[in-house]
Amino acid sequence: MRRAALVIALSAAVACAGGDERPEAVRLRFEYGQGDTLSYDYHARGTATLPDTSDSGETLERTFERRMRIDEVATDVTPRGHYQLALVYHIEADSAHRAKGLPERIRLQVEITPQGRIIDVSGVETARPLYGDIDFQSYFEQSQPVFPDRPLRVGDSWTQEVKVVSPESEPVVTSSNYVLESLVEEDGRSLAVIAYDGEIYLPVRFSGPADSAAGVEERITSIEERIEVRGKIYFDPAAGVMRRVEAKAEATFTKIGFRDGEAVRREMKLKEESTMRLVERGR
Image (cartoon, rainbow, N blue to C red; front, side, top):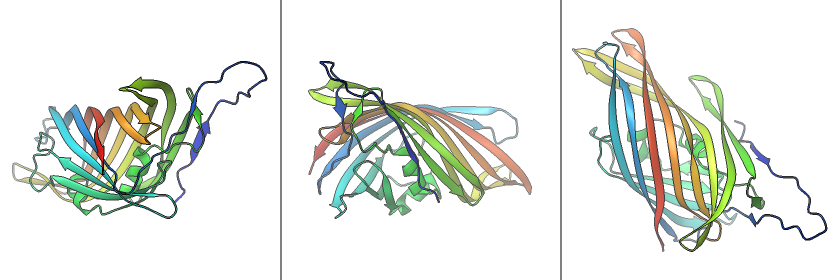
């Protein structure tokens, strides 16, 4: 599998002799010490449009609100300078998580470089009841920004590409675009504002009963999820942490399966606005 290619589009201006001042440059890198704990408050609202399983051809629309606390715990700093992070998602019961058997807490282990490149994702067993049998490595590679290993100035941009391989279909290449939009002051901190837009593709292997209506059982064999997302990251270069992430996402979930022996294809669409904010940092 070809590793994600990182294409950096930076300004090529050369400093000339004279008194012209160049824009301030910042280096974006994640920084953790062993034992560091970052706690984020995550809040999302949105609408889900679902097909009516009664074969009426109509759709149902439901609103939802989701809150989570996300803890990042730096369990180790490797000899190569990579960070081992335990990610713990504390999920509150809400309209999007009413089904029985879903966990209240998800814990994953991630190895990440200071630039943000995902090296490994492990310990995903608690997440599978909620997310299905997805490739968590691919998901994190597509959703995690990887910062260029050089100073950036306002207006500099870069693109990430990830090749997603699925046994059910041809490989798909997704891309995300990032631009250092501005440098701002918030609560006495200098923050880099990074605007982004991109796509995430998640083929999901699934086998089990999905619906039973009027004595008819529908069995889902696979789910395909495509997400378009855009937003802003407020990054603290001095501390090496994200202070806030604001996002808008539109997702399409395509379910493929069989009902009464006939192939069926159903789509669910979701629109969501979310904010993730750092609320505590300690050891």
